[in-house]
Image 1 (cartoon, rainbow, N blue to C red):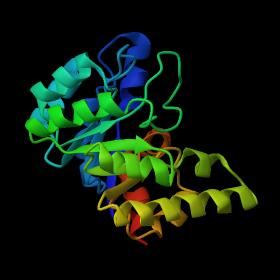
Image 2 (cartoon, helix red, strand yellow):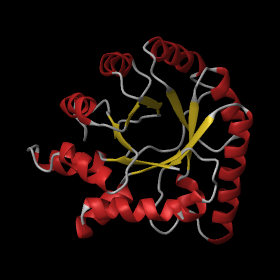
Image 3 (cartoon, rainbow, N blue to C red):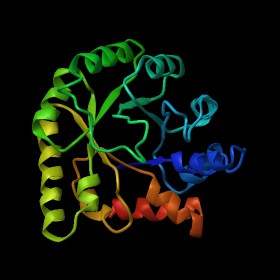
Image 4 (cartoon, helix red, strand yellow):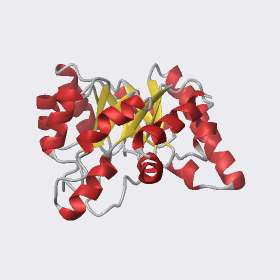
Amino acid sequence: MLLGVNIDHIATLRQARRGIDPDPIMAVPLAILGGADGITVHLREDRRHIQDRDLEILKKIVPVELNLEMAVTEEMLSIAEKIKPDLVTLVPEKRMELTTEGGLDVEKHKLNIKKAIERLHRKDIPVSLFINPDKNVIKLSREVGSDMVEIHTGTYANAKGKSQENEFERVKNSVKYALECKLLVNAGHGLNYFNVKKIAEIYEIRGLYIGHSIISRAVFIGLEQAVREMKQLIKR
């Protein structure tokens, strides 16, 4: 199972002062030394954390999978066509949200998403859709031509007790159905050092994409060690 480390929140800290430190680029070798199989960044419309400059440099230096999370907009599609990341994950985006709130509404935006995927495929860029654990959405993801899906685990991560068990089953069943639909399956959002192990037991998942909890722990123990501890958890 792959571990993709999202480094957005390093850029968030930098942008708080509009300075140059900490530079998210410096996180790449440390994350990889800790066991990261990929680096993820979300280039947002308002550039609240990752900047265009960051993405351009990352494309040049990242030796593992570079996953670009982005909204389905003309601006972002043009940037992706130019940069050519190893993977594009299409996500919903609201200007005022603190973090991504739920999965893409594939049904509502089916035509735009299909056209976006076709554009990215013409540049040989694989596409994943960030979606809720819902069979109908998974089916639609296949219909629009997606190569893979990333199952939103935020509801599972925030739930407790029986509710979390129910949400885990939703995730597990969604992974199984996505495979039946011939889609590769990733998962992410809200996963931390306490709730990740159960999700990691779903061995069919291709990769887990985790950021906030790793960067938070890195404040106290360092990034390389924080990544290493997460990688050990999902390998077990």
